[in-house]
Amino acid sequence: MTKSKRRLPAIRFLAVVAVVGWALYVSSLLRTWHAGAALHETLFAALVFAGPLALVAFVGLPWRRQLSAVLILVTASAAVAEGLAAIEEMSFVRRHELLPADSPVVFQARWWPHASSYLSYDPSSNRLGGGD
Image: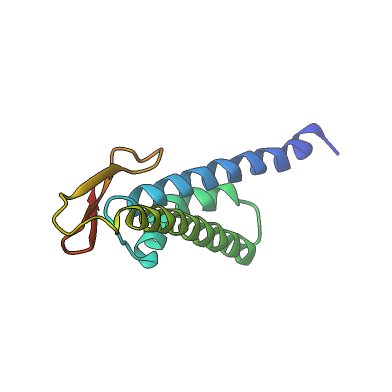
């Protein structure tokens, strides 16, 4: 086996790791723009922004394997982003749901790396909000 053929799996592995990182970042970034986004929005964002790069990472595989790998990667990254954001939102609400109804609205920055976005909770209406 030549050196170039041995490097191909290593290069593909690095490309897949980079695409997974990018897919997780983009889908979680778009998921944290507002509170309570749906999985289909996160999945669409991952597909649009990471799908084309994922196709490049799996170049050389048969088209069915390539398409399956891209769909698995995009779905997994969207599910992880949705799960982490939901955990963050549930823990925020749980921490503040026992505040008296006349308390002011509570704000908190989102977890890293999306600390530029925020969560808000209004004790008078028991409503979760957020934004960028």
